[in-house]
Image (cartoon, rainbow, N blue to C red; front, side):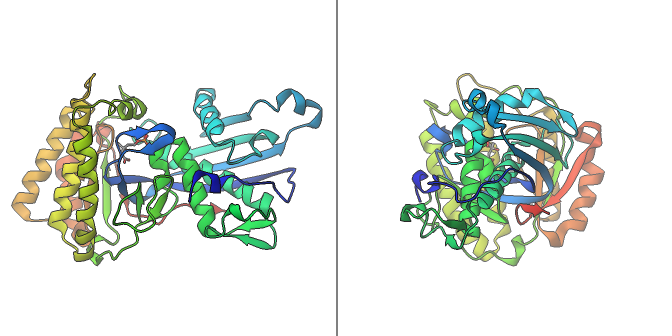
Amino acid sequence: MTEQDFIPKTYSKTLEKGKVTWESPSNIALVKYWGKKKDQIPENPSISFTLNACKTITTLSFAKKDLSTALKVTSEFSFEVILNGEKKDNFKPKIQTFFKRIESYLPFLKDYHFVIDTKNTFPHSSGIASSASGMSALALCLMSIEKQLMENDVTLSTSTALSTGSVERSIDENYFNQKASFLARLGSGSACRSVEGDLIVWGKHKEITNSSNLFGVKYPFEVHENFKNYQDTILLVDKGEKQVSSTVGHNLMHNHPFAEQRFTQAHDNLSKLIHIFKEGDLNSFIKIVESEALTLHAMMMTSMPYFILMKPNTLEIINKIWRFRQKTGWHICFTLDAGANVHILYPEKEAVQILEFIKSELVAYCQNEQYICDRIGFGAKKID
Ligand code: PMV
């Protein structure tokens, strides 16, 4: 698949107005994406667990623009954003940029006025990034509109794609998900891993069939029982605004002294995970996941300018986890995204003991003792 395969020719149907709703989860990377090329093409492949409880629910209402004003507005996108029932004009520039990036793939965008009504199941400004779940939910809503505009008797599949020249096609599920992931990526890179579950690879990797820099794909190989229903308890260490956005962080990987070694390491870690997932090797899994988290933050600390997103309590938690693991042998480990919060990952069969430890020893390090119990999920859902 290339970018061209996501450009539709014309639409066979017309739609005056309507409404679609999708809920889409967040995801947590095991091998991290950090560094990108133009158009959100990742410098290295990444793999993530799709989450279950942390999600965004978005209703997209659309109405065809009034013809009398159409001339005036055709050169502009027309939309409003509502978060938790309140109008949010400060979200508009991000959506405007997103619409601009995806316009050639969804040529209907300027024909409609949209109301994006969205809410998250996790507290806003909890430090949990809502861009992955938010952008994927919006991309899926837009795909549902495109599907309705294309609904017809001939099915468009990924293999036949759009290159066949015919315009009268509807969209099959595989193409729908691929294009939703492709669009979500243009909103926020890691959002492309939120459309499906439960393990998603994004970025070309030589051993992973069909992996692509353009969209996320389901991890195609055997996964041992040990990794089924894996748990993720998210400790909210710092809920403040990040001092450095991930966009800035990604860009600091250009001319970074360790960039090339880091990108090679990500490929190698993904290769190692193939065997680990198959064998259910939890100890080797822990080594890779924790090393990835610390490498991500090491890249931040060694860029120019350098920065630190971890907080003292992030380190307190990491040290407590290491001590507890050494003492008990339970397979608890941590990962981090671009912030101070800690994701604690552990197998379902050890959940009782590990959750007990989290509650008694770690929650005290969270802001207002806040934490979220989540686990692996299976991707976005359309709500009727
Ligand atoms: O999708 P972005 O641009 O917000 O980047 C996310 C990067 C990390 O969360 C730090 C790692 C990842 O792979 O999700």
